[in-house]
Length: 284
Image (cartoon, rainbow, N blue to C red; front, side):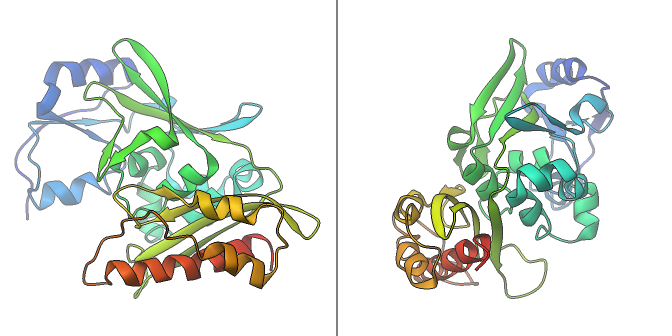
């Protein structure tokens, strides 16, 4: 289907983009890589009068080291994130997750910030962002503010980004030397995950010193499996100990029921995949 007609503007700075957003308000939509918005427009599920394309704002691209964290520009493509040596060294979980995201064509066009701002609970980046304790920089008319990942994802396709704000960059705390794994369960290749688990662990010898675990498609937002994280600390990185802790993975979750599986099936998957992800992250 052909999208409804709209006006198009491509600012070259964040300030120009914010001005356009302020001018057109509810009548406008932000375009990043287009992998989420364009299908919506083609199906006429949304018909904005204006599309504000961020593609010409060079300041929103790139990855840099800021000491204790990495900064990933919102318009950095998935391919750039997945192949960047800084990300691989200091935020291995994101490198692992990006390789599972859609296919090569989508990764080439889609953007890191765009996918996170879309806030699909079945998206592959929300759980890693929560697990790593990322924070999001939002630019608005009054300046910039930073929102922690735990507060950024509000509900289904809803984030803390205000109507007059733009996501400009994501700050990812370094987890240098941590093992990581993204375990994704699908029926066919490139499908949205039925359930996925993002796990990163720090070992002290054969003992798990710290663990951080995110859950994909287990609720209306990406989730943290904090009970499992706490249960793993001080435990040996053995199959029995990890599986015992992973039995709590679905506690407090509200997974959807659909054609791919009902809620109980997803709860079972979460426990199995969590054990697999943690063991793989620990190199077991």
